[in-house]
Length: 472
Image 1: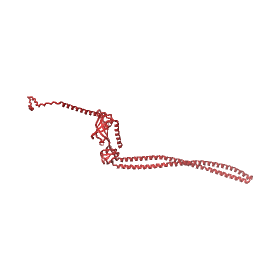
Image 2: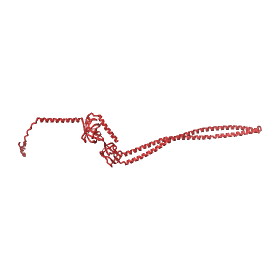
Image 3: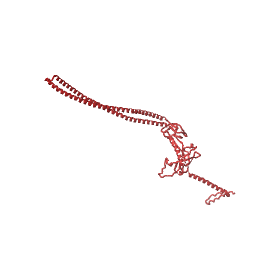
């Protein structure tokens, strides 16, 4: 082998002479290429063909898998996170009994607001209830007395009216009887006076005639004396008849007395009737007292309602767990001021876990309720199994805080995502699941299984129903 000769240094160019052509270096000669054996060439070709077949098989398998499954990594484990806050009460937290990650039972006391003010309100409301109940009892006693007295008063008034009417009837009868007696007495006395007057006239005539005859001694003296006595007797009888007539006429005052008695009886009857009317008004008073009693009862009910409200306020000072679950976040500490409706902690129900996969609208073909799902949770080595429970009827963009406005004509098509709820099959790792974990959901295409989907959805709804009842 020859040693290459180094090139000579080029001469400095001048204006008079052109630059010299550079001399190419002499390289060493390439060694001869040996010929490949036919077996080795066949082996290389076979390897390349096998690699192409394997690669094609995996590409086909991957492509067919992609065509028969919908895959998304926009999926998360979700649960109903509930913010627990004081209900209708405010105050300083005097007790805080739980920490984050504590498991609590339904009704367990989580914290307590200072109850002193609300306890005083309960005492005031209870005293108002006692006063309203006492007033109601007094009103009920008055109503009972009215119900007893008014019928008795009505009966007495009616009996008095009956007696007055009887007295009036007797007075009317007495007046009629008196009028008849007086009229008959006057008529009888008048008739006696007329008869006595007639007898006197006759006796006077006899007396005059016999007196004349006596003076002429035509009749005996004895006969004249008898005529004189007869005349005197007739005179006396006329005077007696006149006296009886005067007495009979004087009896007219009995008629006036009877009339006054009748008038008094009529007045008593009118008074008795008014007494009955007044007693009947007692029924109206009973109705009025009944209305007042009803008002008192409403007052008692209102006072009891106010007492129940204040007792609820006092009860709400103890903040209890609305359902069995896990405390995931505390926002307040002991001594902090808690306002009504402002959360002091958050918790969720570990039995109500599911996966929400936001699937592209272009990958919805073949996805149906009941299809099996493979869930690759990042926190676990082994995947979970599940079923599509239901597919939402709207995309997530419909509920965005700032919806898109394409009125101006600026529009860029964006693939929308539809929330798909997936029920997770429970296994031994269920207690280790946590809300918010990232999931890759692989949904197998198919016609679905409505019965399984309905069963899974019904199970989740039952859990949600118990969850909501526990919150209430």
